[in-house]
Structures are given as structure tokens and as C-alpha cells.
Image 1 (cartoon, rainbow, N blue to C red):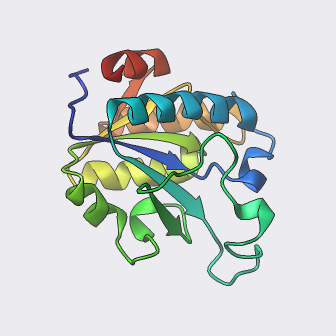
Image 2 (cartoon, rainbow, N blue to C red):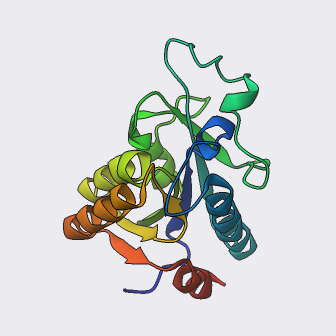
Length: 181
């Protein structure tokens, strides 16, 4: 792995919402992933590096919408003033937008990003779709293997293997924390 550049690396936390973290997940549970993502979040904030939150909402509002308690981001990984949240209606965060209508690609360009660290839930869904688009757009996609999870361990492992084959860098969380700490 090359070193993570500062500035130039943006943390993208994917779908750390009440209803999603409560699902049966493996190899890590929802609360375990939240704990690991909170460590990443803390490190990025201390380093003064940008963080983007991603939240899934159904376009038809059948999930209760943005104000429903189950669709909110979980405690421990909440945005603070100045941090952006991208709302998506599908898997890929690049197909979502902030409240002001800015898409993830445009937002990353405003940060001068060349790399994204993608963590959250679920590895074969939101993480894989977003990482694939990031790679296609020329970003370096870094996946902390122990800060992502899936509906089952096999799906998680398979998605990671496919992402590595596509060019994503798979790293243990400790290496990312060390590089930015």
C-alpha cells in the first residue's frame, strides 16, 4: 500500500443506520462495525481530514423517511457541523446527493480527494457499489476489512476478494489508523 495522503484522503461511512446495524450481520455485528467506524471517524477528525456520511432512504418514503428513528444514523458516528451527509436511494453513494444537491463525486472534488476510505455496511452492497464507482472515477479505494460487514461472512469475504481484484486496497483498520494518526 502507498501511504494515505494528507490532504487527499476522505473517509466515507456507509449506511450506519439504526435499522441496518440491527440486522443479523457477519463476520462482525452492527455494533462491532459501529465501534470500528467510530475509531476511524475519531482519527480522521483529529487529523483534520474530511468525512462524508452516507444514508440510505427509500425514494417512496416507505421506510418512514428522513425523520423516522429507524433510518437515522446511530450514535457514535453522527456528523458534526460542517460534515456532509449524502442520501442515496440505491446501493451506490455516488448516485446520491447532499441536502444542497451536491453529489459525492463533486463533494470529493471540493475536498481535493484522490483516495476514499470506505467503511460501514454492507460489504457486498453499499461498500462494493461505491468502491467500484470510486475506482472507475480514478479514486484510490481503501477498504478497512475489519470495519465492514455483511449479511453473512461468506458474502463479506467474497465481496472483499472481488473488490481487491477490481483494484481496491484491503487493509486492516490498524494500518489505516496508524497511517493517519
